[in-house]
Length: 334
Ligand code: FAD
Image (tube, protein in one colour):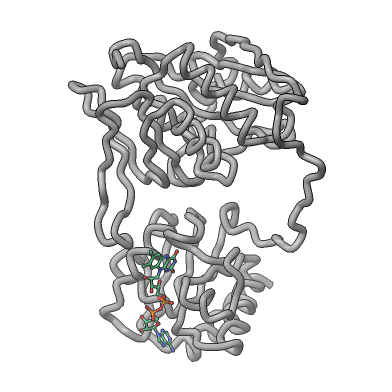
């Protein structure tokens, strides 16, 4: 492989039902920085049907070029069609770096493309940088149960690929009216060549929890102990119009569903206010919430590691302090 043929930073731009998914725009922010350092173009990869109009937003969030494949066969995400389409683009245009959102589809696609074009992939990256001299992507992520950060390099293959979870990178301020070059490509697949068909998409209507977009999260850990403790934090969340979050321990104890879990194997969140109640602050929990704007921790143990990331710490029994807070907020917000 002649690695010098590979140039440019690509971001897979996920769209759902014709709307851009935020993580793609966040990655354009991270990708812009890498592309500027490497002095190359930042390109968005957009697949779907009737999606060309979305290019405008992609340019405004930092891309110089958008590669579009607009075809009815790409209307709904399928590993097979998307892998073939993206694999063809990679072989033809040879990017050196390719980033994907770590959504269900993004993770599925990135791993399929890595196999298709025989390159490496770092999953769930939390930091991206580049070694300019060697043009190597430095993709860092928690490893060994979150106890260390590992920086992973892909030295012998191209493109260097990584997935990044939603909310880890920051979107740039959109530059209204910014434009760039649209490169339209086609796909030669026919429906009858494919092994999979999308018959129906069934939406999970139970999933009313939307932690990632919540402004305020009231999260509970093992210190809230039981149903009574959960009810107590739900009442505080209610008064604050907040969403309930959880540590893995109370999810595993069956107190609350996994959709509420924050952390390495749950969601990454960045609300304006994060209450950590009866949560010790294990590294696997902290990686999912430490970028919250304001963290308020309540814990009986003054040495709990959660206080290392908290902006306000209350050393107290949650069962005493939380009902008082709920009452006071209720009065103040009436
Ligand atoms: P504990 O660590 O037991 O802490 C309970 C805290 O409550 C203590 O600090 C205690 O002082 C305090 N407390 C007790 N009583 C009270 C009271 N009355 N009032 C106030 N405070 C009180 N964890 C996650 O959260 N999210 C993840 O995504 C996640 N992924 C993981 C992935 C891997 C590979 C591994 C190995 C672990 C993962 N974990 C995750 C688990 C993590 O290591 C911790 O075990 C977990 O976060 C601890 O949960 P906790 O803080 O609720 O419980």
